[in-house]
Length: 80
Ligand code: FES
Image (cartoon, rainbow, N blue to C red; front, side):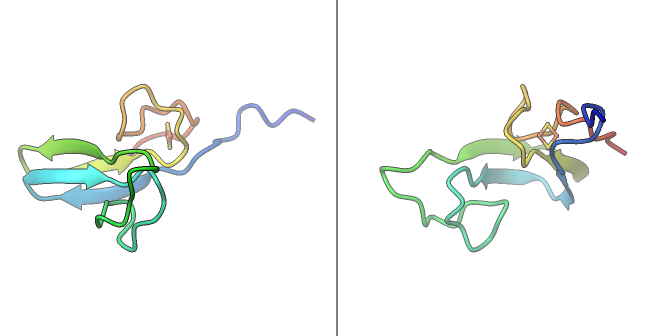
């Protein structure tokens, strides 16, 4: 039985206020999905992104997205 149509990731749905954010990419943060400065020079750099107006976003957690840090449904999840 194939499971190819099942989602491979689960984006984090969150409403953000306008501002600059940093998406943790190393997993060391105590404030996931955001960077808290716990990374080192040996870990991937966080992804900086800007929110210009209050909005709901979907943060990718699977690494398949073409639009990091945002989920683009490559994981198979319907964004709503
Ligand atoms: S969680 Fe949806 S593309 Fe990664």
